[in-house]
Amino acid sequence: MIAAHYGNGTDDIISQRRINWIEHHTFGKHFYYAEDAQAGRFEAWLEKAISRCQNCDLILYQAGADPHIDHPLGGILTTKQMSWRDRTVFERLGHKPLVWNLAGGYQLAKGLTEAQKREPVLALHRETARLHTAILG
Image (cartoon, rainbow, N blue to C red):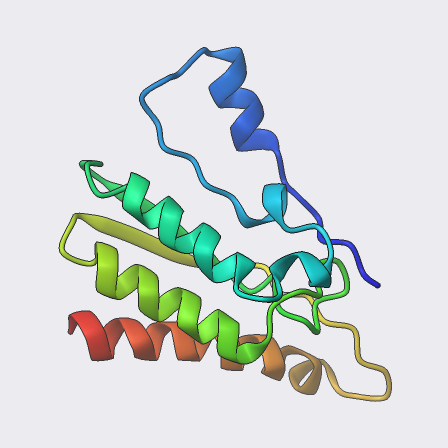
């Protein structure tokens, strides 16, 4: 059982500055173990987060690969769930000003070249970019 890492810096800034007008939703805060994201719990959480963002003027979406099951610190979402996540965000929030970036996704593999070690993460990132283009042009 691998526990996810949670970069809480953004939450700390929002809390310390008492900023109450930002909708901040972060995967790692709610899904710590692989079991936490099963049985539709991840999908329900994302749907609720997206609903809460419908009145936002700007969406900042970090389409990170850290939650992928092969990430040594994330280890939770399957490739199918990652693709569903990106598709859902682009379909449901793409009508708003949307800024997104690719991030993270370290994977440990032994006996491979550096290029081979990076390929699984790059494949996840390419899928995010492909979905963006397919859905939003």
